[in-house]
Amino acid sequence: MRIVKIIILFVVTSSVSFSQSNLDKAKKTFYEGNYKKAVDYSLAAIKENSKNVEALIIAGDAYLEIGKLDSAMYFLKNAEKVSPKNAAAVRKIGRVQAKQGNVSDAVKTIQRAVKLNDKDEYSYIALGEILLKSSTPDQAEQQFLKAKELNKQNLQVCEMLGDYYQSRGKADPARSNYEDALRIDANQLDIRKKLASVTLDDNERDPARDEPIAVDKEPYVDLSALNRSVIYPSVAKRAGIEGKVSVRVLVRKDGKPKKNFIVDSESELLNKSAVDAVMQARFLPAIQNGKPLACWITVPISFKLK
Image 1 (cartoon, rainbow, N blue to C red):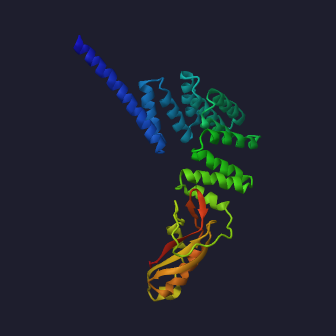
Image 2 (image 1 turned 90 degrees about the vertical axis):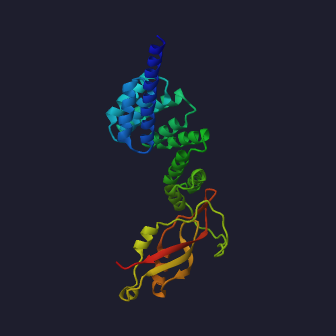
Image 3 (image 1 turned 30 degrees about the horizontal axis):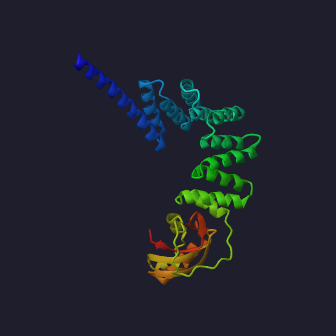
């Protein structure tokens, strides 16, 4: 009898472990952006336990991402049936409704999600997003502000507020919110671009060429694109001259290059083309505590004959 109990316990434990494994795989593949795999794993988890709310929601999310709205709605509705007070399931149903073009229904649905859990910043974000598409887009601001009040470390809502204010020509609050976002994660190139677009240069003192400046991120430029834009000097091309020119450039806080000098050059014939390319490029300014600032950076320009 004891052996039978052990076998039953092993089977039950193995089944739960396997189910959890499928759920973990569904989560992992979803966050990696492999939505088709996420569908497969979430369906496997649902097959093992049809009331697995997490798996139902992931299936709905994954189907939404691949554009299968009816399937997304089916699984999210099932999640709501299993757990009627699950604000996340209700919120995501609203997102599907919005994708289907039912904006007014989506607003009502997500307002219901907010009532279910008024501490969930993502419901306010979702409501703000949908209000932007409604007949009352200005109401989105309050939803985004509420989400930020709940979690000031939410990068998504900082960026959305920045976008909201930028679209309305309000540079100062747009800049402030983009800076908040970059204080959370200075690696966000798209947000750095947006910040540069609402930043005006000023008459602050230019830093000296070799002045040490502590920054979170140095000025950025797409080197591949920059090197492709370089015009190869015809004299150097005819002479078969190749080489590299290192240009040190001062990038202002609006991303525009202001000053330059040659650090190193393998041929003087290449210098002017290198400098011209660098000075015509648009950079992302350096970031220090979320704010842009003027900073020097050395840019390598390569000349190679095909």
